[in-house]
Each structure stands twice: as C-alpha cells, then as structure tokens.
Length: 319
Image 1 (cartoon, one colour):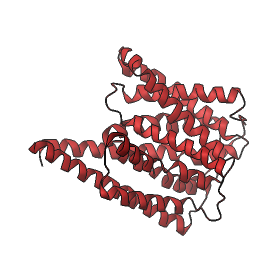
Image 2 (spheres, rainbow, N blue to C red):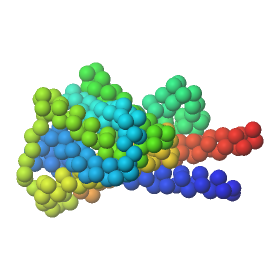
Image 3 (cartoon, rainbow, N blue to C red):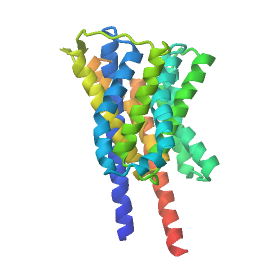
Image 4 (cartoon, rainbow, N blue to C red):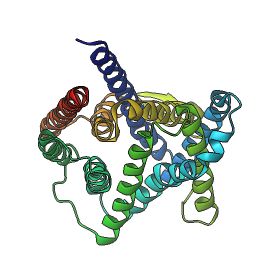
C-alpha cells in the first residue's frame, strides 16, 4: 500500500465514522420530539427551538474557528445563506407541510430519495457518472427504506408529495454543500452560519403564522421516566442540531456528496431503534428486513465509489 493509499483510506474511515455520528445524532430528534409532541408541543415549535439552540451554541465556536479571517465569510455569504435556507429551513418546513397532507411514511420516503437525486445531479450537472454498483445500491436502499417506513395502506396526496419533494431538494442541497471542500470555511463556521440563517428563516415563518408554534412545560416521558422539558430541548439543540450538522459537513468533505448522502440513510434505521429504546415502539420483522436492505445498499454504494476512486487514482498516476 502506497502512502497516498493509506492517507485516502484513513480519510475515508474518518469520514464514515463522522457520517455515522451525524446520522445517529439526527435520528435522536425523532424520539425526543415525539416525547415533546405528547405533552402539547407542535412540530414547528420543536424544530424552531432546536435549530435556534444549535445556532446559539455553535456561533461562538464558528467565529473562533475563522481565526479572524472574515474575508472567507464574505466570499461565501451566498453559500451560507443557501445552506441555511435550503439545507436547514426548507428541509424542515417542507417536511412538516407535507405531513399535513399525507402520512409520515410516504413523506419520508420522498424526502429520503435525496441520495438518488444527488447521484443524478452530479451526473447531469458535473459529468460524474456513478459506478454500476451505485445503481444497485440505490435500488437496495430505496426498497429497504420503503419497508422500514411501512407504507401499507398509505394515501397519496399531490400537494403533500409536492411539499415532500421540496424537503428532498433541501436535503440534497445539504449533502451537496457539505461536500464542498473548496470554500475555505471550517465546518464549525459553515454549520453555525447555516443554522443561524435557518433559525431566522424559521422564526420569520412562525411570526407570520405559517409555522404553528405551541409549547408546554410538562415533563416528557422517555424510557419510562419523566424528563424535564428543558433537558429534552437542550439535547435536541446540542446533539441533533449542533453535533449533527458539524459532523455531517466534516463527513461530506471526506466522503463526497454521493457516499455521504447514502450514509445519511442510516438516520432512518437509528431512529427506529431509538424509538424502540426510548418510546417502546418495537420494530416489526418487515422493518428489520428493510433495515438490512438499507445497510446492504449503503455498503454497495460505498464500495462501488471506493473502487471508482481507486481506478481514477491509478489512471492519474499512469498519465
């Protein structure tokens, strides 16, 4: 193994680990938010507070990470704004708008088709033809996702589907911007800026009544115990926003948008397992089979992309 091969493998391993941390962190938001919903919180209130706390916590660290180089912020102001509006605010708002017209399962299936959208975008826009194995991985992952989300008897709504497609576009933008390694922005700074823009945008939607906001101070029930509402919100902000976005950006820069997007599907599996552990929602056998298919699809995509990268490196070395 050459030095370059060792560096590439180490970078990939670190990226996979960061992507798993990001997916698990994001997935924790479902069970925690579900516990707050049961006490009277609206989804809009939960997501607004979650993103605002994440922004407030990350902003000082994002400023320090710049090391006084505010020029990089000015050069990337449009990208930061796009990240906050699409990757943060639009993804959240469009999903909640979708589930007002259709069931959660189909809405999530449409949103989580983002990895396939990323593959198509990179192919058509940048000429990055995916490896043959990637197509097989897409089929496996989407079939598994459909089983995990249990679409039995699901109703189709054109309006809901349109909103879910908006969430998919936002999620795709999230993965594509995360993978931009040429911006000069530290992951902490991009995450802090994006969450701040997202919090402002969601706050504006709440102010005009498009994002219903209702809160409660009743304790939440998690794992059979009552937990103070502010503790749940703190974890939502620190972990499912702060940690999730920073590690997601760091993973994207190491893995590229395609592999990072498919690794993001692990969020669905982790959410099912966490709902089992924290809320007592036991997954069905069909969901477990679906989870195995999603994992198989992610592995196939990762291996296919790794093989493509090795071939490209060999061709570059021999040129």
